[in-house]
Image 1 (cartoon, rainbow, N blue to C red):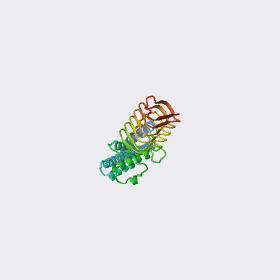
Image 2 (image 1 turned 90 degrees about the horizontal axis):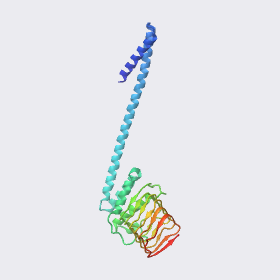
Image 3 (image 1 turned 30 degrees about the vertical axis):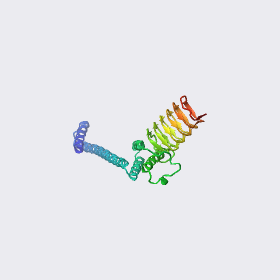
Image 4 (image 1 turned 60 degrees about the horizontal axis):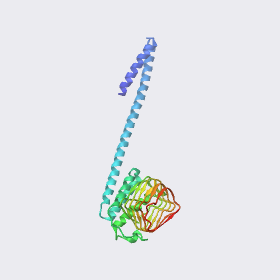
Length: 297
């Protein structure tokens, strides 16, 4: 193809040079032929270089696409294997699946929300749970008496680790769905996340969500808090809804800021509910059940 192009260009140039010269003598013809062949060879070189560049670019694109396909296949295989481990009836195998997903999320940011969804789904699975929180007992002190509880505590800790905005492992922009989940000694202090839904969840043991930030609406409809709850200095940028929730013990909403509706319709406070120092666009406490006492501003 390159040779044919060179021949055509050379022929055309030779004809033009001879036609424009107006002199049929041999020296002029020889010079015209030399010039035509020189220009034709140069044009052929440029054309060959363009072809080589185009071929190299095509090869690079094909290699990049192949590499991307292999990487996506590898990620899918790792994800599938980890999820299969979560279905095991053996706690160590399930823990291995949890940490495999964590490593996958660290290396592949696009997979993080999907991994968080899997962790939340694990916490939404039916679980009778303990009657009270750990009350100071460490995971090591629990031993293997309740493998399911150990797995759930590990999931909660993974969420806490990767939603904490002041850690190297922070995964920004995550949303969580923990509707109807049973959560034990749940902590989200110092975390930043997008939407969060805890509707009809049951918190066993103390709840610490201090200094957290919810960039989208947070839902706690019909949620049960069996122990103390601490939301001190938490920010709900689009508001939060605690309608029909029940607080069995003291709850602190001190210094909370809410940018939308901060609603407690038909909420039951059985002990002290402290709202001092808060900044709210719209605080709705009109229909709360005051079995306990309120501290406002």
